Image 1: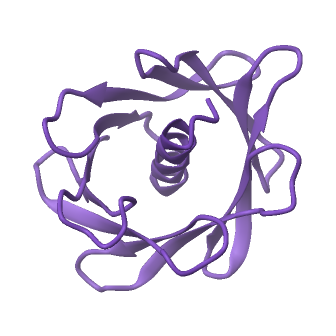
Image 2: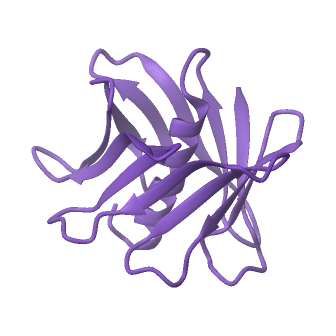
Amino acid sequence: MRYRLKERAISLSTDDFVIRDENNNVVFEVSGDLFHIGDTFSIRDRNTGEEVLHIKQRIFSHTAQYDIFMHGAEIASLHKRDEPHPHVEVANSDGTVLYAQGSFEEWDLNIVDHYGRLFAHISKEFSIIGDSYTVDVAPGVNDLLILATAIVLDELREDRKI
């Protein structure tokens, strides 16, 4: 499934996105919270208004770390690692670990497991106002987890942590 993440041009926070599906329908809205210490994001279903995912930065961590929650339960934790080389990994509650690989400078990334199996591809699109990304998610993969990963990667890029 293909998604497009587009940062809202006019927003109280620079971390608000609209997520469209491959038919250009708005399916999710993402809002960042300005009034928290550390980054927090809420992904809401556009049709129901229900929060489907919540992302919260861990403040007291020696590297950048974000926890991802679905219906109040932690489903994954995203970490920036520096050893043996700088990379980002997503540790899922089911034991699966995914890695963001590719060019962070050109923003052409694959999300793979330790066997190299492709779970998703994230690429940055040209946009005059706000950041815009295409996220291609492989069949059978948790779309929301991959979208949350793309949002956190964007935040890490903005904070110059990757």
